[in-house]
Amino acid sequence: MKHLLSIEKLARAEMESILAQSTVLKRERGRHSRLPLAGQAWAMLFSKASTRTRVSFEVGIRELGGQVLFLPASEIQLGRGEPIKDTARVLGRMVHGAVFRTFAQTDVEEFSDYAKIPTINALTDEEHPCQILADIFTCQEKFGSIEGKVVTFVGDGACNVVNSWVFAAARMGFELRIAAPRGFQPAEELLQRAGGKVVCTEDLKAAASGADVLYTDVWVSMGKEAESRERIEQLRGYQVNAGIVSLARPNALVMHCLPAYRGQEIDEATFEAHAQTIFDQAENRLHAQKAVLQWLVS
Image (cartoon, rainbow, N blue to C red; front, side, top):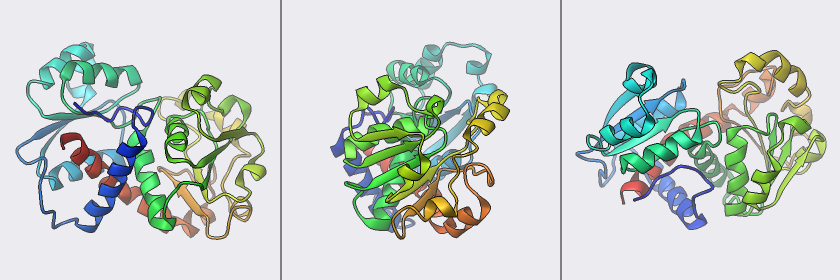
């Protein structure tokens, strides 16, 4: 049985299959020749707030012929302390697949073990595989293969999005540069486990020089709100703006996984100048996740 729990656990061939199918599903939206989820019901268990992930999965499951049950953790027994494994064993007898957005990576993995149905990690504190698949798909649309390119991440380099980028770099053969203060860089153990060409530096200008992609995310991730003042102060010098963009390659992509806090990780003018790419990236969550769903049931 297949799951999408992390980029770390995906082989390159699996990623390439999902990315290729994303292109087909985007091109054929509204006139799909087959509905692989017809007759199926999928549960969406969300412990964290969501806009893009929730909407893209709900729409995607329906467009592939399935039905959706949205189950906020606060409205089911999971939110009152029922063990993950018990919720999983109940749902595994009633639905055909699950999309789980929560805090701990171990919760998603435990759910998949006990539910015994295809399970998708829709974000944990450790990884965000759906986002990175959509991001790589966006890069491919814009300039072909991501292999051999330079992707520079600016800001909080110790977040789930960066973790997934680290594993993707090793799988897909591109260079990842992470520009962040030392305390906001990925753990050395994770970098060694992933392999690949990953450069961590506090020198933002050096990291941006010659980059094909400049990528950023919020400075205060969900669950880190109590640290807001400290994080904003420490990350203040790590912003994507016109000066940083000028150091990258001509026509470099500026990407943001949203939501964006203008004036923090990116300034207003730069965001709006690259809004087409950023919202193409957001739309591509739908197409890439439909490809994941199709891959899981194939």
